[in-house]
Length: 111
Length: 114
Image (tube, rainbow over the protein chains, first blue to last red):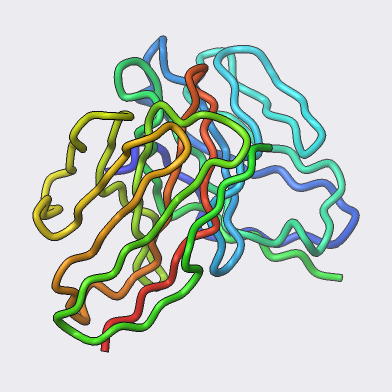
């Protein structure tokens, strides 16, 4: 079973910021928080990952709560190409790499 | 990100035949390979994990004699679906992991068994 919970779907308008929430209340001290996204009929694409501190990269930002029980993926300016299923995954320790995918959040971006 | 290829990208086979899916990590060495499958409108489910040169470890409910995994080199892994049946129709995705735990996903292979 997936250890994270995410909203089933979210909508956004193009060029607006999007905040995708994720709860991971059972996270342990060695678990990383990973975000992947998947377009229809494609393999997942890495977005970002973090442990404790907020992280930024070209694609997105990851804001991690101080207690690490939740996080938010931030797309600063959504484009139509960002429409995808976004998966938040906690993984670490001896199971690092064995990613357990939940149902994810379906992000719809309106032009 | 790293380049991962899968071949074929889609395949249709008859029930009872075997199908081999190749996964190549083109610009890094995959010390560990994960194989996932995804049924329509469902999420990815891990099938098995293999380390280069070792036998694969299968998740509960995945038949090791039906889904043969070979990870003979650091850049190539294969998944063979033996005696395929319609219920094996799915989207199969490999996920190579490098020595520094960097992990990527292949583009997937759509298998349809008729």
